[in-house]
Length: 74
Image (cartoon, rainbow, N blue to C red; front, side, top):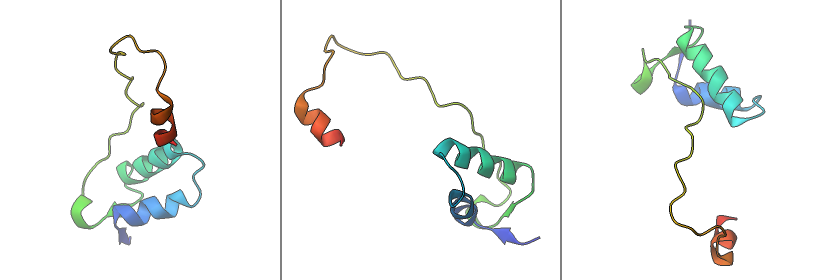
C-alpha cells in the first residue's frame, strides 16, 4: 500500500467532492478505515469529524449590520 500525505488525499478527494462537508466526511472515512495510509506529520493519526458547532449566543441588541460590514464580508 502506498502512503500519502494528508494534503495528497484532500486534493484527490477535493476534485470530486461536491461540498466541504462531503470532502471532510470522505477523507475522514478513508483515513480512519485504513483504506489510506498517511505518511509524514499525520502518519498513524485518526481524524475526528462531526457536525459543525452551533453558533454562540448573539451579544448586544443590534439586529442589522452596518453596510460597511456587509460590503467587507463580500
